[in-house]
Length: 484
Ligand SMILES: Cc1cc2nc3c(=O)[nH]c(=O)nc-3n(C[C@H](O)[C@H](O)[C@H](O)COP(=O)(O)OP(=O)(O)OC[C@H]3O[C@@H](n4cnc5c(N)ncnc54)[C@H](O)[C@@H]3O)c2cc1C
Image (cartoon, rainbow, N blue to C red; front, top):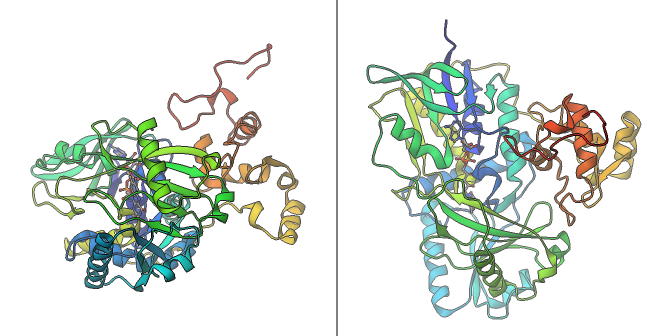
């Protein structure tokens, strides 16, 4: 008898994981499929991590409506999922007379969209909030409801919460096609076999269009738009205290300068349309563009504070809005596509909308009375009080052994992350759960030690430890006749 689910969700990014979690409030058999070796491995891990207020998108669009609704859900959601969130407010900075006109339009648009806490500041007020800002600043649009979040903990937390509430998660499982009965989808084919379901939700980020085409839905395409970034050392948060956008361009919100929830500073992104959905390389030209863009806002940035660069790909759809629909033909499918920015902000509201769409389409939703909204992240030793640290060491002496010196991550945290609800099985997965290797040395000192600890905790050979799954192994073979 084949496996039969009520809903299969394709893609364990922030959107798919929150959809799975929202559906786990009901008595349903749910399956979450992810082709990577970890959850939150797609665009969810490579973005600017801003919880937008909602003044950017065109009034009446899905983007505008779900941005504002999602923003309102963040305090509660992040408290439940133990993900760091700071509703610190955001600024769009005008550097010219023309920009001041743009600020006025954004303000009006924000009001139409229902964005909360918008105010127009003059130059003096703006500089008082961010003294490091260029003296060219002419004014700003301040959004008190804007904030910053840890997208890793949000994505992982959403998926773990779903699993805690009964969702079956299959990693390294790629959906290759669909099963049909007449014009209704009845399941999916994967590299691990076929799975049957009454409903299938496509939440596949950049690959949503490929899956739509496989389901027989033509006419929609995703054209990936790359954004490159610099990450600066935490000491640069002494210079940058806020979240600063320039005035937007037609294709992006512009190269911004923002503090992160962990007090690093992020510069970027630029915006370049590319063809290859797997191309996450950064280029010298792109990074130069990011650096010069950031200097326009904060001239006092220092290149010696750069500790990393990375790129993310926007899932820019051919119709300039989020596609959120149940197509009639084929039936049995929910399509979530073109979920580019502000997709992180909107994700919790998208998830609620999917539940309501399925309810209206006839899916019986009996409450799951055992639903537990809480999920706990690995406790971060570095942010505990001295007394809490001592108590933790008393329960497990491995918390006294600091492995990552830059971020003060202990062996106890590494071990804990390897035994979480969704265990860290790769170095990058561990990094996103603990901040290990996220400091100035970027893991240069800790890597050999970490490989040993992970192998011991996961009960596998050190040769099997990878950076991010697949073929990304660190070690080729044992040396000096020592068995691996
Ligand atoms: C440069 C940049 C900056 C951004 N900044 C912000 C911001 O500041 N604020 C904001 O609100 N939004 C921002 N966004 C947008 C936000 O990051 C995305 O909207 C959000 O992460 C999308 O989540 P997702 O779950 O749809 O996609 P993803 O995180 O990409 O998840 C999709 C998942 O589906 C999986 N998958 C795909 N195909 C298959 C298959 N066939 N079988 C199984 N699994 C599959 C993928 O592996 C992936 O894990 C930004 C995006 C970019 C690129």
